[in-house]
Structure formats: structure tokens, C-alpha cells
Image 1 (cartoon, helix red, strand yellow):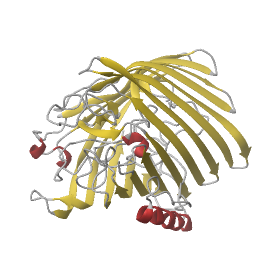
Image 2: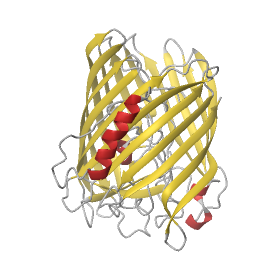
Image 3: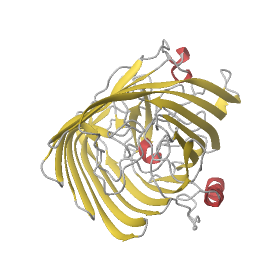
Image 4: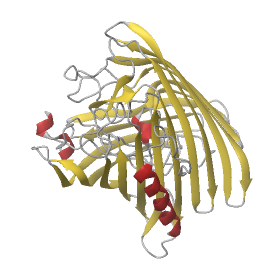
Length: 469
């Protein structure tokens, strides 16, 4: 992903009917729009595009010039659809070694950008997105996968932000792990790999949901995992001593794919300097019902870890829990999720916010809050048309524990296209509507997910197109 946009993968919809709480549910325009948008989406055939790529960066022309990307990347293959509920993740490729990758471009239309003079304007940019290289190995006993990405040379990493602006200036691994199949139902893996907190991808958006923004969705860290899978349930657990490493970029600690707790850049007086360690994460999923062309499943997840502060040399902690309900019926899919995250930090200053970062761009998030997420989508029959089509609508609301903080929200209406013949040409197109969302609109990146931005609705359109090989 790239710093100011959403992600992709998932299913479900959340449209709060009771928005009376003046602090928790200031849904006003966006909530109303969300309900109407979902209704429109249901009127037209559609299904969620569960493909894993990257999102968008903060507007380089905006007051926040930090770069950051929010993308999805699946270990089973670059931009493949999300695995079925009870298919072990990551998906295994054909036996043997398989090499591949992708090259992508992007088009950004941002209705709330800002010029060099600070005046609001609409910006339009067509640019390079990323080069992805990957390898997968599978055999009856062993398996493994690795993916590396190259960014730069686009409007997202301009010279005004301190970049030389050539492709490859920013690069980092997404994952790199190897494992053994202990039995038909059990496997163990070691390396930089997906953290098992709910589904790897909560929804279908290219930029993921706000779960990605606060560091709970599609996270890849270094550790060991165990998975056991039966026909009706799946259990995953992992211990991660540390996060994925900081790689190549100009930020102090944010040249990475996943949103991790990081050491903020010294130039930012609001930044904290932390690192997450000794993460214990578990996920259990159970099929509640199975019927013709569909099923209903429930999931529960927990995340416990230590958060070290480099200025005080003291340890705090992070606690996160999630519960979700997911259903499929024919070409339809839906998902509802609620997650709670709390941190006890040992920062020298405020303990109400913490600095996180990815795509070479640090930003702040609220240390404590509750996230509500929902998505509804449908696959559209396109007949003889050479491209398949999946449509989706999702909505996320991050209610921050501090009453003086402005809550964050995002509505995403999207479509995913892929050529039927080879599935090598893939296109994502999404309309994003956000409030205090670091990935949508100018001036929100640094504090939108923390204290909040200007509390105004922002709108942007993102199209990502790629060739996968």
C-alpha cells in the first residue's frame, strides 16, 4: 500500500442504526452515506474483491508530506483472492518452486488535496506504483514463501519530501518464511509471516480497512506460528519476538510494509520512540452453519505484547481483542467485526498516542479505542465480457477512548476486475470517503488516527492496475 489510501479483502457491512452517542458515533454524513451506498451496491450485482495489493500515500502536496502506504499482500500469491474461510492461509502453490511478481501503476484523483500555497485543490496523478518479486515453494512436507517490494519514482515520493524520486528508492520485504507440515491438519512456520489476528484481510479494499491503519490487520512480523485446521474449525497461534525489520528508505524506522509501532523521526515533536516485542497472538474460527452455496462462521482473536520505550528504557504493553462474524451465500458475502485495542505506554510525554509507520512514513494513532467494521459485497456475472467483476461496500469507525480525540471513519465503495483468460491483468477502482482518516484527504496523515485532523469529510478516487507474472 501507499500512505494515504485503504486496502483490500474481506466481507461484510456495518451501518449503525443507533448513532445517538455524540462522541462515539458522530456518523452524521458518512453513516448516512454508508447506508445509502450499501443500498445502491445491493441494487447492482457485486462481490468483494479479495485481492491483496497496496494502498495510497498521504498527499505529497498536502501539509503532511510524509509518505506511507497501506497495501495488502498475500503470502499465497501476489494479489490472489482471499482464501475461503477454512482454507489454511497462506494458500499453497503447485508443488515445487514457483517464481513470480507484478508491476503496477496507479491513478489518484484527490478532491481534498492542497497546493504549495496551502490552498485546497483537486489533484490528479498517474504514476508508477510498485514492482513486486516473489517466490513460493511447496512439497508434501515443506513449504515456504517470500515477497519483496520496490517503491519510489512516483508522485507519492516527491523531491519536496526529501526523495530523489527514482524507482526502488524505497524497498522492503513483505514476508519471508519456511515451514513444515506435521500432518494433514497441522503445520509450523518460522520467519516473517502473517500475524494470526482475525482474517489476514478483513475486507476487500485495496488499502485494507482502518484495522490496517491501527496496526491490527494484515501484519507481518518475525516469529513462529502453529496452525491446526479441521473441516469445521481452525486454530492459529504465534509468538513474535520482534517486528519485521526496517529496510530501505529515508525515515528513521518506517521503511516497512506492515503498520508497526516504530521510533518516530526526531523532527516530529509529537513522535514517540517505541518498539513492540514478544507478541503472543492467537485466532480461532468456527463454522456455525453450512448450507447450499454458503456458510456462516465466527472468529475470535487476541494479541498481547510488550511495548518498549527507548527514551525511558521502560516497558509497557499492548492488548487487543477482536470478534467477527462472516457469511457467504452464492455470489454474496458479508462480514461484521469489532476490535478493541489498549496500550499502557512508558513514554516520557503523552501516553495517549503512539507513533506507528509503514511505507517509509511514520504517523500517530490513539493508544486506546474500539474499531467497528462491516462489509457487504457480491460477484457480478459478466457473461462474455473478458473481465470478471466483484463489487463491495465497507465502512469502518474507530471510536477513540479519549473524549477530546476526534473519532476516525472511512466509507469505501470499490470494484475489482481481472481478466478471465489468465488472471494476470488486475484492476482495482475505489471511491474513498473519510473523516480524520490519515489515508484520505490533505492534512490528516500525521494525527488523523490520533487526536484527529480537521474533522471534515474528505473524498478521493483510487485506481490501481497491474500485470501479474
